[in-house]
Image (cartoon, rainbow, N blue to C red):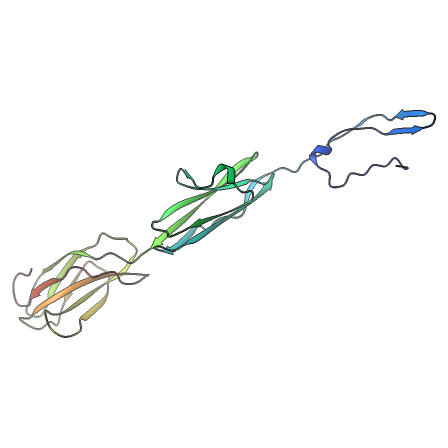
Length: 229
């Protein structure tokens, strides 16, 4: 080194320390006054550059990848949890990015992405909602029977995200297609314009944004009678 000029490129924390200039020739050695070099390390707490999806709606039995990306200085470790269950092994915890693979999803659940470093910890919750067809309405009852109308009432104990109900009916044992009333938003309905003194069978079907669920058990009644089964 001829000029006595020292340049440190891409300085790192380990470059920090005491430096001095040493000059040597045939007459001897001379040391400069020591100077201290302090390397200021940029420290940034973890933050999500790409948090996981807030809500993911999937069909029953489907697969899903949940991606979570976090940055900081130092770079944070990223893991996934389901409730209190740790889904990322401690010895396999990735830095910066973690993709959770869900296979054959059977139930709705909340998954939490956690990013942590020596400067703190953050988390973000992703809700995985399983969509499925409605269950069948139950306890179909018939009342207010006249010669040309009956009142149907039923119960429903399945998922609440229903759009409407459908009533299907036809004369019992008749070789014909079912008549259908759609768009019912109550759990009761008066079916009119029936044939007098005819035995009918009725089914109630629940509908959501996925489609129609299975029909209820049949309810039968003969118009013009005061009571029905």
